[in-house]
Length: 221
Image (cartoon, rainbow, N blue to C red; front, side, top):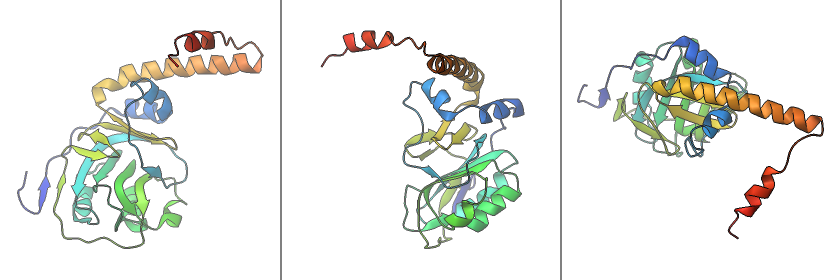
């Protein structure tokens, strides 16, 4: 780590490509349901044309409205990584826009997550490159620091460690340790099969609704 205006740590090894590919095919809601339904970012919105997000986190901490650490962090990113930026939820100045998100796409990033403001949303919205943010502001960024790269950060109330797997779709964002991935994928795929069976029963008029009686019986009000 360098103790200057920017603190920089090496990026953590990436998750296996087959795990990332499988995660890209699973709705975030199914993963969330198998993580006790109390995990994930709150308050961040997708601004891109709908496309799934999955990749390994390279984390960035920056002062609200400043993007010096973001500019440097691109050097720590590999194809398939997700840049996760904790800008403190500040939306007074955008920290990225059309140009930096385009650059992220050209170097193979899987996406960018910004707990702060972005701009050029019309341009970003025409692309499938995933960009999530807290809000929008036309005012551009400062470039003074300080900041840090590859330290634990918080985005939308969700803690993200360097090297965590980050997944996202139009419903939102979720992050978890890579060692959780295989078991989580199995549970989510089993739930998907169960939900597909429920949908088939609904179409055929044979959905068993008796479970509602048990839910109502335990209701305390």
